[in-house]
Image 1 (cartoon, one colour):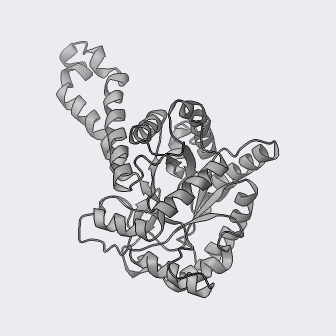
Image 2: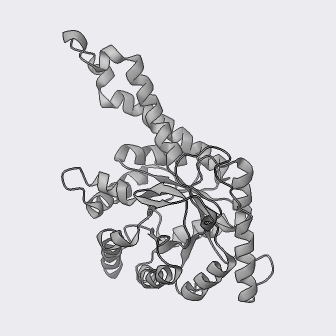
Length: 343
């Protein structure tokens, strides 16, 4: 199937919300990790989300100039071609973009999609993320309003992060402390500024103790039940029926989460869960194994010539792709998206 149209992406999100599952959002940094993600989704018979962070886009742009927009556009165009061979719907998303990188990443990409839509085409990406968690909430939401208006015009969904996620991702760092929990007041202020769909669709990355990267059990206390409190508080403020879920939530920093934590998050409105650390490891682990097992073949040791079949990147690259795709299948199972693809 081709990359999801705006209509299909909205249908994907609506279905996830109604049926209480979430789409894995897999960070990719190369054509090979893209294929691993696509393969995993296809094998799980799940639609999904592929995303590119600012660091991933810079890497994709090449080390000669490290241009984020070039890297993101190049992989997105590539994805529009190769995704047609996979029998699932895939949405393209840009991950964490802080304030100092908006002019070099999200705003140019929005402009590109605006031109495509004006020409009668679909946007290049289906959603973009604005990470204003390092700013005051007032400044965060002010910028979000500007971006949401532009995103709506370009048929794009905006993702916003209103309070910090702990740990570090692409240079954005937050301490692990009590600020990692979004309050009902934060949620109400977000709804006041961005509406509840009437000003454009957005995904909300609220914080319930989330931490990016790898952490040991006990270092962080996740409270996914907090999402229910946020929905209830906003629903009451706006006269929504009891039990309604005004927000489409995103689960950040999910690596290492327990099954119970994930299921609680799904019940409370999470429709997207970011997965990067675990898939990075899944991709690299078989490469390391191959190199250790074939030391004399991948290196020209003691004046020998090595073994071309073992140092050929295709040899270990296939192992890496298979391992990462298996981790994507596992993510689909954990998030209950297996077998839910739109026909």
